[in-house]
Length: 180
Image 1 (spheres, rainbow, N blue to C red):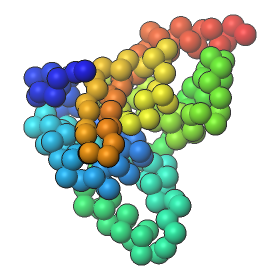
Image 2: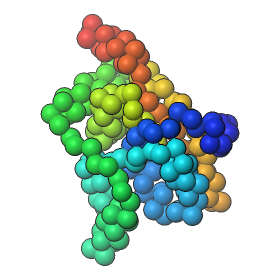
Image 3: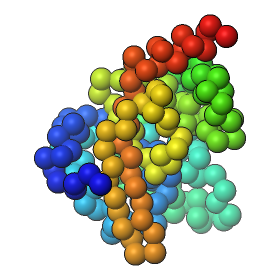
Image 4: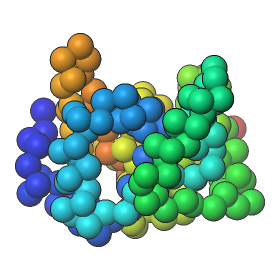
């Protein structure tokens, strides 16, 4: 297990952190337990980011209008930078999805939102990291898992994986896909 010290997270200094939907959902329901990690983001001067697909996934499935409002209020309390989805992001997310399929990862295992996240990580590979609880959705044949931050909430343990896009790994996987 990686130590939870601010020095072991030096890679975060002045970086952007893309918060996966699962992270936001668990954070909403377990705010007290996530405070140390959020303090770490603040201490390292990180900007937290999302995009409209993540926000839509977070809001979907709300069974009442009041629950939708509660979730929207939760999102609005934070100063998330909202990444814009462009044609290039969509094009790259489709390519990434096809590379996943070439590696025998089923479409129902990794969602289009995961592929959009991957496309953003690719576009901003020098300065954007992802934090997720769905570690299986970011395979290490494209990504580097650079940090694990464990949060114990009593009834569950959350392993927050920090990922960065690895251009060399991607180019190798892309070449393998294009040669088929």
